[in-house]
Amino acid sequence: MKNKYMRMTKEERKECREKYYETPKGKEMKVRFLRLEIIGTFGILFSVYLILSEMISKNHDWATYTMAGILMLFSLVFFIGAIVLKRKCFNLYAVKKMK
Image (tube, rainbow, N blue to C red):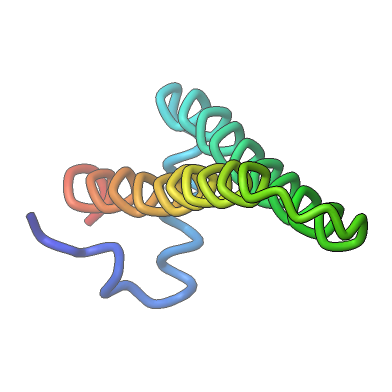
């Protein structure tokens, strides 16, 4: 697939995003992207909180570190996945609809 969106200028990308979010599918996807980003951000912040609270309390329980690490990994997958899916949707829209 052509990667038209990444070859656009900054102004063209902004215009593409605005036009995409005006479509019915774009409105729905905007909510989904926001949800993925919020889940990813919350997971990352909570895992950092778990690690810091474990270090401050000087109660070195490796199960908490492992759980925090796994949570951090999955949260990063959610956050990066949202970015990748956004680019993919914008690129599909740019290839099919924009001229």
